[in-house]
Image (cartoon, rainbow, N blue to C red; front, top):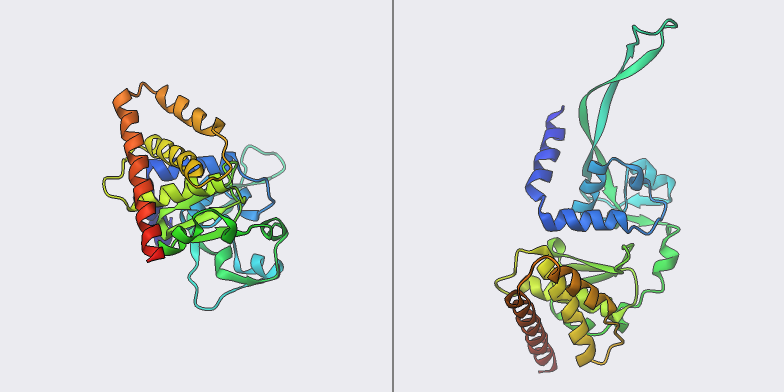
Length: 262
């Protein structure tokens, strides 16, 4: 294995958290089914792509074939490619050759976000996205949260703490408020380390904010979140903590709204 390949694996190990692992699995299981080359990569390389904050990564020539160019000065991300060499199959009478794995090498690829040029097929579906119509979008702007359209799973959106961004696959106000709640929860002190706890907080916050700001809302998903979470032998005191966190998120948003109006 080359030194660069070892470095890639070391970096992955440092970045792995339960939250990132769960989010990645969720993205794979509930993907949109769009034909993107990296979806056929190994599980490991797809995880590398996810950690790099993109849903579409390709090699330099692959982007060129798609009518896009890699922007000048951007840095590549690296995936692992197996190194194989031909060996003679001693058990074969016709002298057939097989392949033997000797290790891995690092190969540079580039994120969609680091390219420019022709629109890809799936861009058509993203043109209907209207971020300025989302409820509390001014709060996102004030908090320097980058809200963009992108391919998502069945939830319709996701918040990425690494670059303080929200990717939306729909115009659903409730979905956006869920992701915005994640973003606010991330900047508040004493964030809970329990992924499931944080998901319930975000979902309940979204439902509450919908009621407060008169946004169309369905409580079916919220109820399902709570039932699933309570089913893990949670105590009533734990759920009180959830509701307290929801209040903290609401008051934080109200404070930001006040600062915007001032």
